[in-house]
Amino acid sequence: MSEKELVVTAEYSDEEPTAKFDRDELVRGWHEYEQRTPKCKPQLRFSARTDMGQVRENNEDKFDFYEAEDPAIYAARGSLYAVGDGIGGAQAGQIASEMMMKALIAGYYDSVAADVTGALLEAVSRANDRIYHLAQMIPERNGMGTTLTGLVLIEDRAVVIQVGDSRAYLIRDGAIRQVSYDHSWVEENVRAGLMTQQEAECSPYRNVITRSVGAAAEVMPDFFEESIQPGDTWVLCSDGLTGYVADDELLQVAGSYAPSEATRQFIELANARGGRDNITVFVISVRDVVSQ
Image (tube, rainbow, N blue to C red):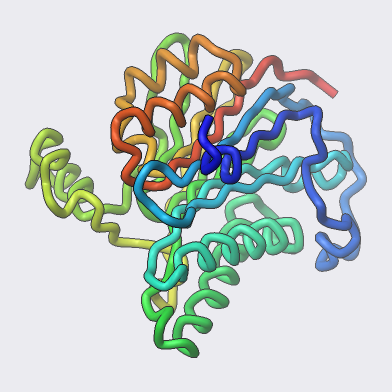
């Protein structure tokens, strides 16, 4: 492993501390929790890694997570995992992705919204406001923004929030499915029937995204919901991985190895095939769903 990889690669498992936030500060917006025990809770193993790749001089990708342990907090908000890929010059992309992650986690658990999607929308809107207004104040950061692919696992439900072209995949029963939709020029043309998938992969505009957090005054995320089943594996990743690793290879690796080894192999694969972008990946394995 090179010195560069040692510096920028990070890995977490469910045996390690999951957050540095003080609970009372993090959820300061909640005056009273409904004191109930969640009806069930998924038992997870996960790993996350990020790498600069072989060409870039800094890493504009970011991942973060928060696992709620208090039963009342978990019943209301579950656990959150997210990946962001920053855009903008003069290190503005790195600043945007870091700002977004901090605001997302704090805003989501701080929200008094009644449901998960409402709390996520409130949190990402707050993050968007902060990044957008910072860009207006500093000309060098004009247009700064970041993608967001977030996953909330709460009781027996999985909720995905999507902005941009990072991706969320679900592996179930030996098959892989992209749950999120790319907010990119080529993918929107493919869905409209104006371009084939093969044409999209060869297009010089394949990296042009149509939505991001912070680049405009308002943000419009997509939401997707799935059930949670024992044996599920979720893969969240930036396009630095999917630009080099095909869906069937994601299935083969994430479906065959523990999360720690799968994330290691994904980083190695993308780097071996060029690594011209930052690479970030979460692999989250649902070992069981336990009734409480």
